[in-house]
Image 1 (spheres, one colour):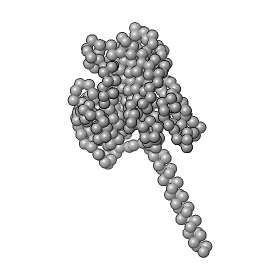
Image 2: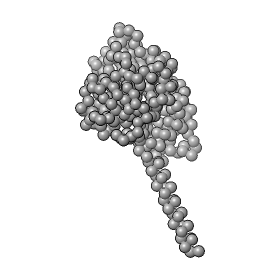
Image 3: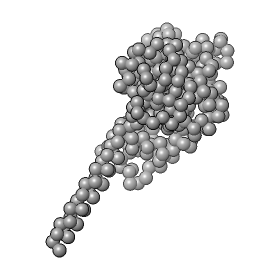
Image 4: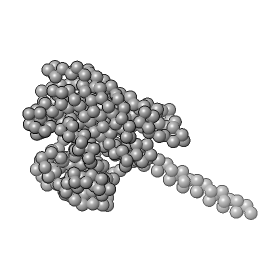
Length: 142
Length: 181
């Protein structure tokens, strides 16, 4: 009888600890982080990605938004503004481009990137204003 | 898409002549802060799109709600899915006029921008005090203002009402460069 009670208390304590650990982990989970191993859901060129948004934004939202997208494109500009490094990839026309907000750990690699380079990066697509926006970007095989 | 095109057509240059008086920002910074005794919530968006017509003293800003970055994933999730409903209302916009903006002054000047904010499908008139630094090649707008959550029909469940301030503080810094076209 006594051993049953002890078993029940221990099981309950283990369950409470497990739930607390899960809740703590869930509540304090850090924002999305892309690593070289992160599974890519879509592979596409920057020109095709922008063309998709310009042609049918609602459909492109369903196809790309909140997905990990690997994009290949030509570098239009590299900026450092408001403490953020951003790589702008060219679209088809002169105007719209792909804004890639780079992960903080990518600083060294970004310094190697030159305008006109063909690069591949992956990030989380957030949608389209005048340009398409990708956050948490990391360079692929820099 | 139609709304975006319509919005941008209102502010985008249609000829090279007009283009010279227009400035563009692709990476404006907009942050908001919610202070309560339970927790502080803070998020930043570094991809605000904006155009200013210097001659007409008109300004337009568009922000993608999903591009706000939070410290915790759960905060982002609640913001997009429960409060702002980013699937239904993916963008927030501001359109307005800079009152008494003296474009010939190179130094800093503080002005009122009068216009309308559309957020969560609700449009409200707003006056925002802004500091404008007008340099030869670029214009920088900075400022801070408050927004009442209830004004924009953002529903906060009673169980978490204590975690979210009724009035949130918004700060912005938008750096413009000459329009490319």
